Image 1: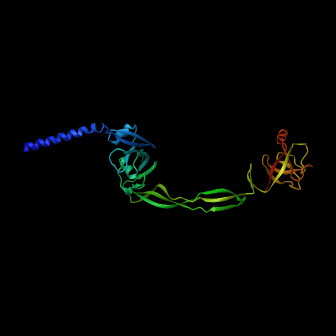
Image 2: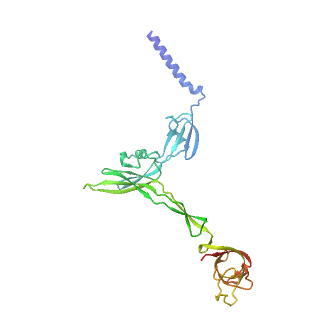
Image 3: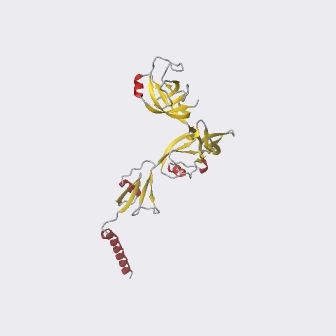
Length: 323
């Protein structure tokens, strides 16, 4: 009876082995996995017989630099059909211990994980930023030794001031649109205990805890015009017909040797010595007159005959400047 049972057991094992062996043939030899690889902002799709992520990444042509890593997206911990393998590129960070500063790279998410990944052990109360903090590119991580501890203090931050031109506010006046607000920052220092019992404090870094608010000042630009000498306030703007003239050998009507910038005017409309700005001509002064200078007719002096011809006759805006 025992011999019959042994033979039956042996036959069952043989049939089981035969079925397992024939499965690939019965399923059309398709035992490949359909997987996806996310790398550097792109997604690659491939079919593979590999089961290890490292082998799949190699098949996908992905090169992992020192510190780079990968992770399986989703709840599954093993590669399956439809799995997504995400490549996580390492970012640089700096570790400062005592007088030593060294740069590392890691693809880990937090400060503590990054330190462990590069083989640095630590006590959590002697690390800044805190081990649970997110790792950021270029971050400085301070690891303290024996006799050293962290000390924190808070300081205020001055607010910046921004000026904005406002053409509704009188030129030369200012209006505060926002008073601004001081910010706050945490000063992180290293307190070192010396053998003689004394302590010294060394500032490590500053962290902004509240951004300052900019003070905004409206700068009055109403009744102002931009000139080669900057903005100038004007009291009146008139439109005039402007012609050009050159030296006749005579002085002006107020006794000046004419120069470019002298304007002949009707002094009843624009008094002598009035300062003005004329776009296209420049800064000027009423310093001459003539028989044709009636009402808003003006004549602009030019040093060059050719320039006077080029000017010809045209209508211009004349800004009467405030003293």
